[in-house]
Structures are given as C-alpha cells and as structure tokens.
Image (cartoon, rainbow, N blue to C red; front, side, top):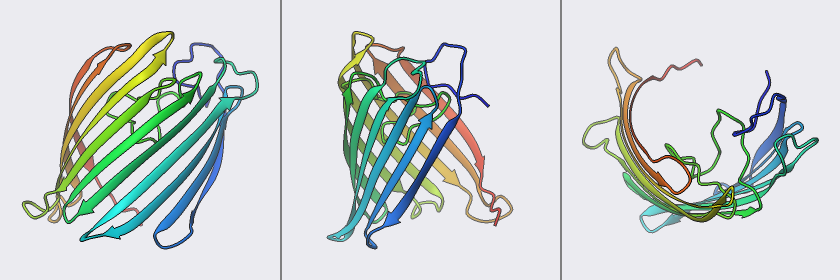
Length: 224
C-alpha cells in the first residue's frame, strides 16, 4: 500500500520503513529513539526522554521530545528542513493532574508526517497540529479522575496557543481548546463499554475555523 505525506498532491506514493527502541536507564528515567523514512519523500528521527520524580505528595513527570526531519531520495514533495522540540511537565496529585508545555519548530518547512495519521506530539489536538515552520506553541492541560464520584468517569481540558509560524508566506497564528468527558463501565455485563463526549474550538489565521462536537462509543476487549 502506497503512503503519502500530508498535503501531497502528486501521483507517486511510497513505502515507509521505521525502527526504534525504548530503554529504561533507571526506574525513574527512560529514553526512546525512532528512525523512519518515507522513501523518496522524507526521513525523520525521534528522541524522547521521560522522567518521573516524587515531589511533595505528588509526582512530577517531565516528557521531552525532539524530531529531526529532512528530505529523502527524490524529495517528491519538495525540500524538508524541520526540527521540533517539545516538553510537557505534569504534576499529578491524587486524582488531579496539571500540565504545562512548550513547543518550537525550527527550519524552513513544517514538520512532515504521513497522510491520515497522527503525530506523536503533545500538540496533536482535536483539530490543529501546531507544526508550521517557526511556530512556537504554549500548552496547558488539566485532568481529573472522577472515580470518587463515579468509578470510570474522567475529565480533561486543554488549551494550545501557537504563534510566529509561517504557512506558504502567510503568518500562522492559531489556538485551540479541547474538553473531553469519558465514562467506562467498570463491571456488569457491559464492562469495558465506554462513552466519550468531546468538544473542540479552533481558530486560525491560515486555516478554517472549527467548532466540533463529537460522541464516541468504545469497547475495551482483552485479547490476552
């Protein structure tokens, strides 16, 4: 099956090769490396570090991610010159968690990714991606496990603000807010059945504004 980078309008597709590994340096620190190449389009490396540190009565998780991207082979979709650094710092105390993050794209192009896919980035939001050339993004997230009220009920809300980006010569500024409420049945005949309501509001200087309301029905099935 041929794969294409997002936004590609040509007729030639490609295969995608990748490999990677995760290693625990200590019980609190782990590192990840991946390499992927969409032949004749682009290649990309990913480096990640996750550290968990008890702090007070809670735990601080530091998650750092770095992408390095360049063109490969014929570069059928044009030049690729994009690095992206992002970090998210989350403090969890009991049922609540608060995260603050920052992301910066460096280089002449946006971060490439395969069409109809997601990015392993904190900014892979409900609508936007926040990965235009030069874009800087601030992130704020809050999670609340409402198991004390109703086992299986959880709440999440987050906000992204991107600025100083470039999209085909136009200034790229955007923001998005997402709110999710999810419930998963914990026992009885319907154990594993989930219902999730999502709301997303997106505004941008280079893309269409969006107001999304989504309802998901899910079912967790243990295969082994």
